[in-house]
Length: 125
Image (tube, rainbow, N blue to C red; front, side):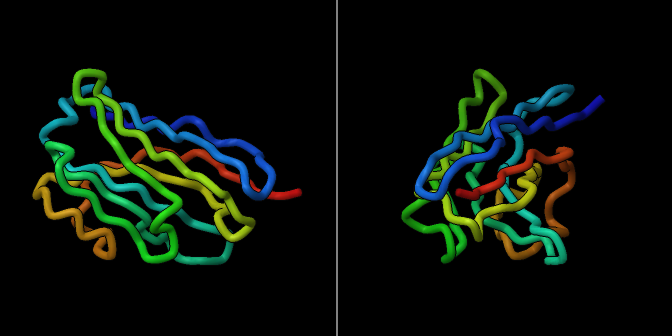
């Protein structure tokens, strides 16, 4: 069964950091670009970052540039999202998703075939 599982979310204070993980099972992750998305209550799901199959190309939403980094370890079938200087507006459920075309167009959620169940990130003092 093809599955993506996110982990690493939690409650942090403003200015804190988290590292989210997205681990694949049932398929080889290196055949896919992997995107991270988030959805806050009452808002649409939005793309925040993506990494190409090889890891050589990354994309970030303007709202997270300079604070988020993305990396992948294909040997571990895992992609990571490092989030620094967290702010209350980063509070959301974070999802990872696999995209087979290696385009990493994070504004087009339709390109992403497989989705995880999400991990909650809450930022509050």
